[in-house]
Length: 284
Image (cartoon, rainbow, N blue to C red; front, side, top):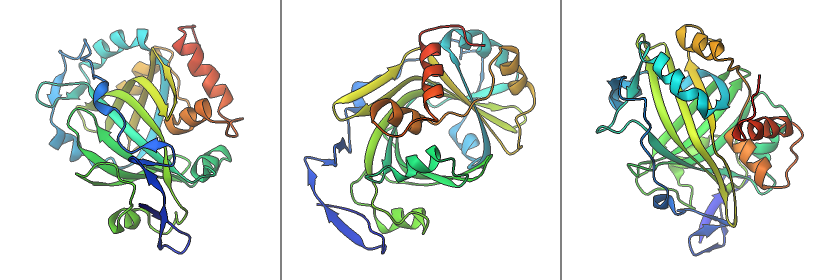
């Protein structure tokens, strides 16, 4: 048996069959996907995980960019003088597997769809190459400020939300949460030399549900994370020179709209845009 959060904050029992809550496996075939090394990262100075963690960018302003992978090679070359790359035991590209949670009627998705400024995403994040796992809560506090809180859990994704997990959720979410969708991708993480800006670059994006999947080959999702309200400096300038403009993009919302018959009016232009990029149609 497994447990979910009830309106009164107590634990309610739901049926679990063969490690699956609802229709989503808690531990999908994570090890069947290989994180491939990416060329073009050799020239960057290395950044340790301890240095990256010390930057404290869990409360930050996020700006996302979506473009085709053909732009990435030249972009990385131009970023070398300005950034260091996360390096763990010689590896510089890392696999991410995120299991998103939501209510049966997709309340967290609908908050985004209806344009709520204050909204939340809840997920288990597994670092594919190390096996480390975190329970994470991302809260959009204002139109341009995101706060992420998380706790490490060596047991991996679990059907039962413990007291620690519920404490991280706080009182904002008292509805039953179930696993909904896995989002998988490979990530490069860069940090500006002046430590003002973190840039993540995600490729090989894939959405998975039980019996359904959707991939966008060739798609790149870059995200500038900074304490400043608007991204400035050489990294933002470089993206602009490559005609890559900021756009709103949620992996969870895009994946759910691609896989489920949920209300998706606000996502349709985004889905069409990423499909064009994935098909390598020039987008300006």
